[in-house]
Length: 504
Picture 1 (tube, rainbow, N blue to C red):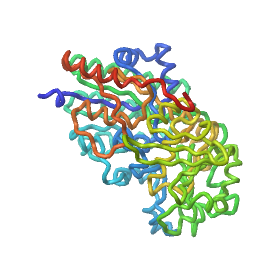
Picture 2: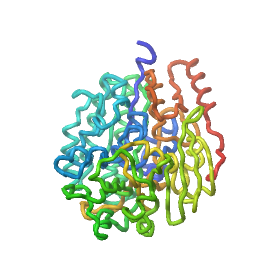
Picture 3: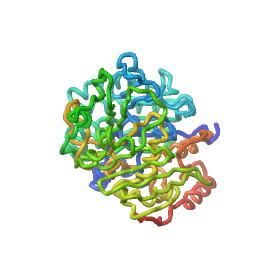
Picture 4: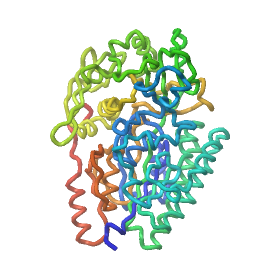
């Protein structure tokens, strides 16, 4: 068996885990098994994808592509090229992954995007909403996920889902699968129900730590720990919600016929509102009139009440695509344009303030995608320029993207049970996530999409074509001294120097 064939990778995703909560529990000694893991390996900050919400934010990990590139821009969307306003006939052109349409996610991913399950045959996915490439044996929790998802939603009892994942994870670890993805849902559920730093959240995280302890001990006894890459990650953070501004009802109060889940049987809707997480939303103007192009911000100012939206305390940013391809971003402080273009060596993003500086950059700036991340990862809106231009890569994205300020969300009437915490926006609490590994990590921030090429390299699998992930991390294998020295030198060479830019 070759070294590449003998390596394994296990991606453990704790849904909804805030980075600062994870770090605080680690520092308090509440996570002894994870502490041992990161002491032998490393930890870093990873910036998730926008919208920062479950299922959509899994795509970078499992495809190496952003939501815009995957053409899955949100957990709810409308296909403007197909929807004709007849809610029954046109229901296939509407999507919500929060209900019976959840299994449609696999088919909605762009056909030229490959999942890691397709690239690594025999993989196992546990409680995964993305399952393309997994056969029945590779998705053993598909029934349990639906059952416990329903129970947890109505009974607000989330730990049994995590316990089921833990049992299946240990079984899979004893099997031949070279790649295992396991999603632990309880932290996210208790975060919404009780708050991001509640006792229930900390207790659920402690149970994950115990599972990691059993997993690593089992691998150590089998002599497999050194050749297994273990990553503990999250798909998004969360923050307290004090005020619910139901964006669909906001439009209805202005006499606008509004389509929004779950009441999609609206005759001749004037606006469609698709909320995610619930800290962001996409707004589609005149959704019953099929068309290929989005409306620019100038055309939306009256039909979407843009000025009134921006005057709401709940609204942080609105963004729209201009006819020339620029993304126009607006806040109460003014407007700016973003340009995304392919450049030698990668993507370059140009930020041009017009009547203000809505992203708070401090002025015009042109930089590579990596420079934007390095300079803004710890800002109030980490990586916002990159994330916003990515949104409009998807033809399914709305005419208007709206993000919420901290303390607010955009869903109330159908937010059952009422959320005490939410996510989905571009704020730091939502976008920063923990990245913990059992092997050394280079300094500097990551995007979650950057882990995909690292996992493939560890497994010795050829890189998928046209991914968004940056192959900046080469996890050092412990196969032999010569390889260890080589890989260590490569990692040292990739240490990110102190960035220069508006947030450095």
